[in-house]
Image 1 (spheres, rainbow, N blue to C red):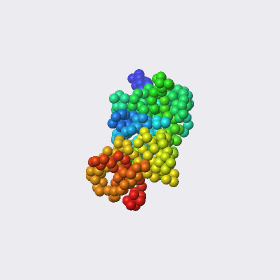
Image 2 (image 1 turned 30 degrees about the horizontal axis):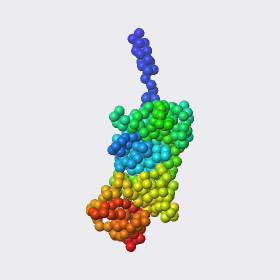
Image 3 (image 1 turned 45 degrees about the vertical axis):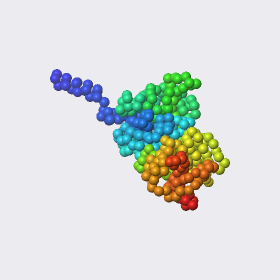
Image 4 (image 1 turned 90 degrees about the vertical axis):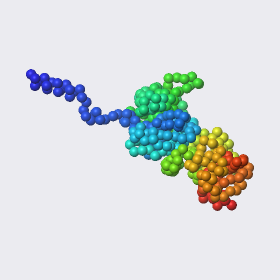
Length: 358
């Protein structure tokens, strides 16, 4: 009898314990946690996720206007500095250039749109890290597909800090990016809204091929630098077409000047196009700085400390007026006042040194 009882207990226990293979297999949407990251701008926190070894996607409103962007990857625990490649306000999508550490999952973007009633899962950091030090998972459904251009509505739990998190299907593919609470004519509802993966794919396809590579080099030097001499001002890079500049900023220019300049007043940004490519970029945005810390408001003493004596000094035209300018490789600083201060910074190709210093 004791032998039979022992056999019976062993059989019951084996039935209660799932197979070893099942114990070690997680649904794809759970495994996607390895691709999630916390986005911290110093003033706010949000969520992002890796889509390549050099890019992270989040919501534009999470990083808009940020002087620095810190990204903490959950899977590795590594914190890295990133720099904005694109912040499209129309669709509320941002792309951040960063060296994604090993161990981080690259989340695939679904090509098809989600269907109404489809179950979805959302990873994020609701209320930043106040709830948990790890990403939180919420389950829901697609409430309505195609409610607005490039977006869909979903019924899922979220809070500030969840914005930018990946919306996943059962296969672990990203079908959207969580943007926030849905508002219809300023009346809040229980629904949230997300940008579709198709919208994200289209925006990624508009980035210059070299953008991610240049970004990784820039973050190695000083990741919070928004002005890279001879390269870019924020997400706008030399060599971009007008359409690429517009896509990177997410808004059309406020003014198109007859001499080839396009102006973005709300960005304090001017871009001069020659032969269909960005040839010079001017900024008067005080929140942006070079890797050496030079920004609008820096004095001539700051410039000498950072770069030494200028390669040349000359009076140059700045949108119809003549000002004193100091040239360094890939950088032209317009100065005025006493003591002299930088009030506009121009990025241009270092190969133009001969033309500038004449």
